[in-house]
Length: 396
Image (tube, rainbow, N blue to C red):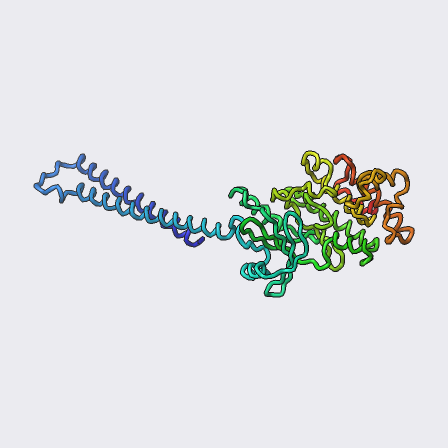
């Protein structure tokens, strides 16, 4: 394409130079004729016909040259217009408007992905917004697929294009504590989002097994999960330009690998898809968002504070116990009440209480969770402050 462009420019320049030289030569001949006619003796008149005169021949040449120049210019313009149309079509084919699949990973083949989505897959979970599947591609790669229902039926083309650009930006995020978006497929009234499959499952699944005494999760592992979550938030809040907010941080969106290293999933999706109502995660959603949908990085911190409280207490914030007046009405309020009363140790999960040093660290973490769960956003720390203090050994 680049060589064609340079060839076209060269031909245009050549034609312009040729036209300039021809016109200059014609003017030069005309000046020379006028000069000799004015300075020399009068030329004898002849009885030649008009068609044999030099002026007539020059006029014919100019007409022919003008016609040829017009034809060449038209052909060149048509060629350039065809190249522009071809480039535009290629661009549309390369970046379709929520049509797909649009692949962000070289190890995923579009045809293979389409075939895998049609086949029977293992259902991992579901919610009012969609379903979660596990499927295996022909090359043996296991992927996790999230289908969001009704995500594009009402959007205009401009909104779809903006959504695609934002998804492409999310796919470029690279951090050990973030789930990588590998592909998406827009079809009908839904969108398929493709991620790496993480075998351990989500933090919600693991904590449910912990409460049922199927799994034992020590404090060191829980601490590592909390630190990984805050590192992921710090990357989104302070290292991405422009800043990215999660909007839907909760245990079901914290995936754990085989070493219990956390990876945040669904970053920024509620902002892209209006049907993903943030208020549906009321147990983990900040008060300002529930009241008037004001969302900021401090709202993500509130969600982190609730996750930290779950890790410390082992309790589910939707437990009916927190609806009782004695508990204060929520997990956060119950934890704050115990801390103020000097009874924070009573809130700790008994299965993680070990050595005295660990217990002191857990009580410090209780204070962090309470600060992160402050009613006013301005009273909460930023993810950068939490991470810096973690490195200095002051917090967590």
